[in-house]
Amino acid sequence: MDKQRTDEWVDFDEHQLAYHTKQWAEPKESTIAFYDFIKHKLLTSNCVIDLGAGAGAATSFIAQSEPEVSFVAADYVSDYLEIGKELAERNKIENISFRQIDWFSLEETNEFDSVISLQTLSWLPELRTPLEKVLTSIKPEWFAMTSLFYDGDISCTVEVLEHTNSRKSFYNVYSLKELDRIANEFGYQVSKCEKFEIFIDLPKPSNPDLMGTYTQNIRNERGVDERMQISGPLLMPWYMVLIEKIEH
Ligand SMILES: C[S@@+](CC[C@H](N)C(=O)[O-])C[C@H]1O[C@@H](n2cnc3c(N)ncnc32)[C@H](O)[C@@H]1O
Image (cartoon, rainbow, N blue to C red; front, side, top):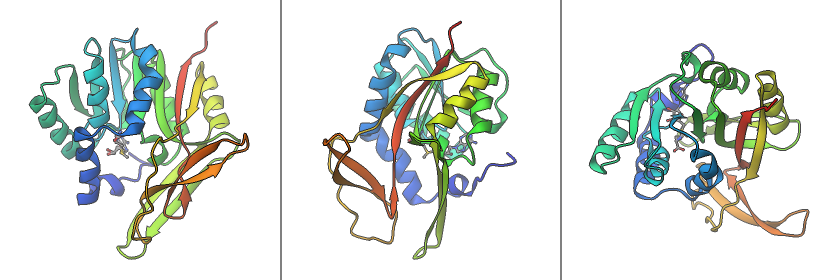
């Protein structure tokens, strides 16, 4: 786990725990949009691994919609997995199992034909190693993800410090062009890519000192109104991306 910064996840607080459990009761709009984004690919999948699944709330939503497909919710924080296991049993979801896996130590396997990952890649220290791990160790037919991306050739890492509670976090916005270039090195390409557009207004949090997503309406370059997602002082450019093998 050399390059990984683990403190954000391993020493989780109530805030993070609530994030993982709340979604079990109320699937996020972004999870539903992601399911629509990958539905056509799941028709030919047998076994899917979700990397950085947390307590498996998003995985279980997709698993319930696709009872013929097996899902493995993988995370390296065992406490999240225990919560997910209990909730899956209570909700009688039979096509999901939970496994403690560190993305950076993925072992070679033929067990999975496809990989998903929601809201995790941008919180890993960098793009190349995790992408290479997936494409060379799992060699999936396809790999779909949600994360923060930019459609130009610029990537950034943002360090966040909430002064009032001394909470530190960080995130990466990755260049989509760089993502495609790295995928090409391993015989894959970005085959589909959609900006996630939220359909509801999220109010600005009453406390400006804490990170928390809200929306502002803007008119884009095509003259169409869209909701921009913002957290604290930062833009949150969410995308859904599908990577597939290059056909020869
Ligand atoms: C923001 S949460 C996303 C959880 C879930 N996918 C969702 O959409 O609700 C990111 C998750 O990635 C996990 N994670 C971070 N680094 C990881 C690694 N190297 N291997 C496996 N999981 C990791 C964290 O423990 C955390 O549960």
